[in-house]
Image (cartoon, rainbow, N blue to C red; front, side):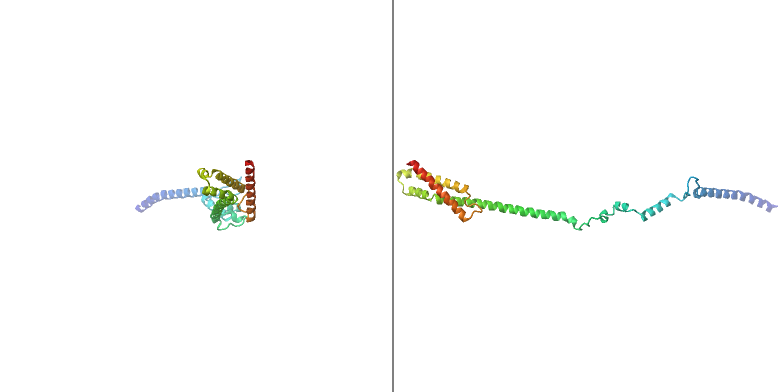
Length: 221
């Protein structure tokens, strides 16, 4: 009698446990089917994939990486589009070309500056050389008046020495200035003139001086 009562008590305790367990299993299966069971839509021709979006995204990314278009490849920041163009490849030393160009231009500027300085120096030398030659040529053509001035200063009379030979001095300096102007205007001793040309200019200057002296003598008489 006692054993029967204990069995009945055990049955009463076991039944609620089993019922609760079955309910939990049914609830779990229901939730699983809701999330995993394929859904049917009569308007669609394909079955909706119940898998999580993350796996689909991973597959799409794999497909994208496997099949990429040429335009996408060229637009990639890691790809140089010039390698697919018809343009010739750039020289690896192209980055150095601006430096080389700058150094070359600087060398050219330095050469031009040096050439200009040398040219200026030559012009200056030619100018002073020409001035010296013109002075000497004028002295040659006015040599007779120069001799007369020296004679006046050395052997002149009392009045000549008191006046410092003003008349002879004026004639000499007038001749000298006229000859210098004539020789300068005709390019005497200028660069490019040869010896024969300079001698001809000097001769014409002497003739000009003699004609002027003759005119002065005629005016006095």
